[in-house]
Image (cartoon, rainbow, N blue to C red; front, side, top):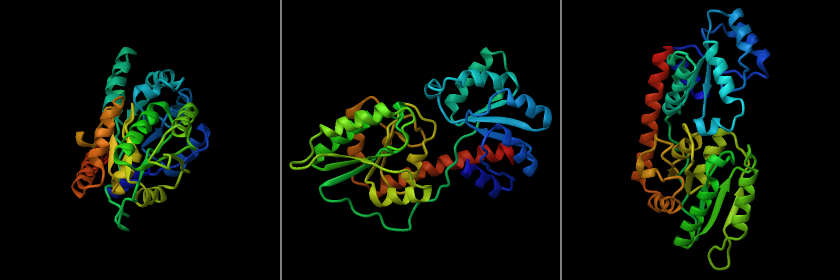
Length: 317
């Protein structure tokens, strides 16, 4: 949301992002900023809270913005109950993917609510490549592949790890597979399976492939780390809307492989999430990095960002 707020302000639309501790802190921020619209990011405000907020601020337009497709929402036990509660109260539900918007517009219709209550608000990413330092050369006999983000089952880490090991073996390299182990979010079984996989994997003669547990880094530090340390980035997920890690990788000049769920990157960068050998083939096409491919990736990201900017400025400008 920070990127969207920055772009709206740069376009002449006064906007502010604030972090509050709970439902009861919303009113203080409204009094301080006096907005016309309030966008609540993600499912954390109980629907009943809006009964009070709408009485206190009847002229405000309230929006709850979602960041997930239905497969991930299915793991949120309160998702459909709360979404129904928002729609019943004429609270706009904004989706950051058009497919999710279409799905929830059908839900709104089934609930007897107007489908216009479900809208589209895409992620925006500042289209600026990282060029502060040259990308270091690939290390001899090694390949460092990043598969970052929370260890959620729908992120598909295990299939990607097997594909990465297969690709490393085909190229005679020792694999270092980097993940964010500090963000399990229901992914403890994923972490255990990854550890077991690498414990039993055989790399080049005299070496084993390595599972690397990385800490979470601030955004600027993470992008710099991608550029300095990662040869390939994988985000071949089973369910996505935008995926900021893929965008960070593209901006950092790292060849990036995704699933069709991340549609802003073209088919040349996509592999089916359940086709391990298909993933290996796309990894082979992406590595080593080719300037033309990196430029194509960045052009795809810039095109997405321009489209997202138009959506937000047209809505609120």
